[in-house]
Length: 280
Image (cartoon, rainbow, N blue to C red; front, side, top):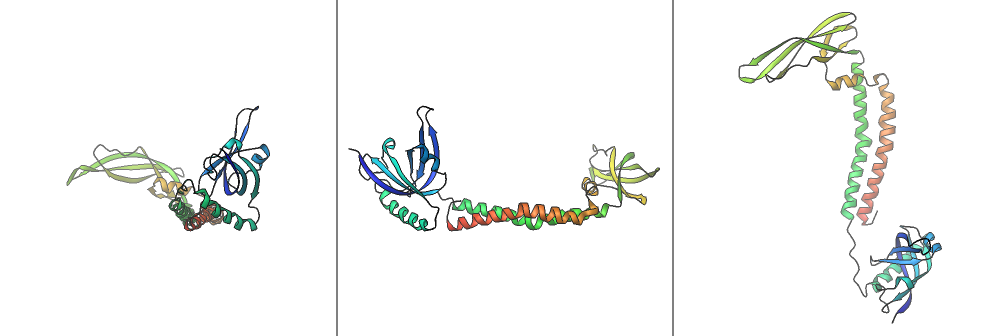
């Protein structure tokens, strides 16, 4: 024989779902009880709209059970929610905790509580990762930006051009027959004049110097030149004239504030929640 019992549960609203068609709709709300088990309740439209996913609330329910007190075996279609009280006021927090403790005792009568998944290590790890990333972005990344911008000032008096490879040659090492020194003369033009610079690099016999190389020279001393790496050429085109203003604006405001502080805040939150053993 079915038993009807009025119960008060301290729960967390887990999810909402509408089933059926437009002529026969059913509004379902899933709640998580103190023992970790879920209950799917069939409610009316107004109660469905009132329920907010993730909120904690005190549910008053008329539960129809197959056996008295056995809420784990209830008839969903005949179970009704008679009242909902949300934790919108501080005074309800203690009441919620008290009801939850009372629920835990009798809910476990017919079935043991579900073991709660231990997310604490994951939350702590997330906190450490975010906090570390935030500290790095907030402190070290601006320094890297500033360093690169300031290094651009070293090349503001230089000019970038391309040298053509001529007069190629190679010599071998007596102690290593597979190692060769390839050399050539690079020809470049500046201010209507032609200049040359010697260049060489080690490699195997089958290696070959490129046909062209990047060269930089001082504006007022074009004869003083050298072959430049790609990294150097890149720095030549950085905004060196306003490096300090870029440092203040990009380095600290955009990078530090927009990325660093949120990461530190998020990491701190995860660490606190993990230490307390709470869910995020």
